[in-house]
Length: 360
Image 1 (spheres, one colour):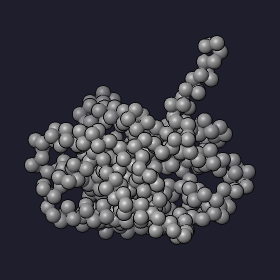
Image 2 (cartoon, one colour):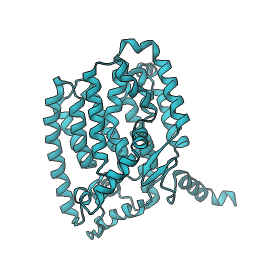
Image 3 (cartoon, one colour):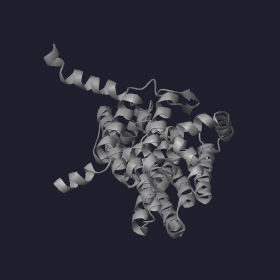
Image 4 (cartoon, one colour):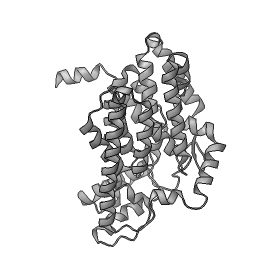
């Protein structure tokens, strides 16, 4: 145990833990999605075998399944479950970004953390955890077929649309040695995950429109592409945030072939973002493998080993000076979930309830 703690002490684990808690809880401020109660009601509808909801978020059943398994019957407990899953997700992400060496902390200044902080109730944190693990294996040329199928199946069940996009993005970024192995095992997992998801949806009697059907509703694609085109710089900033400087630095230090892959993967992420109305949220999630690849490339570049402090200084200054810009129908610098109860309101209510007799 002591040796294990010493090994952790040699990494950025403690500083990363502090940074991720500071950014998520104080700088961004955690909020729940406004329609969380509707999602929570799914648990009762499924228990009573009377599913009336038709929202396509049913296709991301992670929290619903956990609520059923744990027999949660109170929305406050459901909120706490989601919060603790988020905290645990942060821990797993920190552990799985140790391979970035000294650049692991910079990864926390990417836009994905904004999304995971502002939209508690969506399964975004689970997607980021799984794609971080998968990306690490791909970047390190350590793709193991069984593990990749397992992780990608879970990712597909959690969010099938993101899983499909990740196959293309990571397929572009992967080294030739692991590219074929990754692509065919991921496609196999995508098929397996969608079969499991379809069985689940049929079992609960879901009859609403899925994500794919929603995309082809009238004006959805036109509106989404217009939003993206008119706010392209904000969307790019919302995905990269503090890693933007590192991204711009790459053409000066890497071979053009590797830079091309990163740029193409970014354009693919923008393409999938353009068919979604959750613009910055979706882009910040899709760009996670690109952020990890960018930072790993910097970590491996011998010319930059003595300039890490300078890169951090410029990146973090840029991060705080420019600030948070997030596009969801309009530009937001604070959480768009303005009508929902925040985590702090929930905790305050809990404490006041527990201490009511004492404080009287």
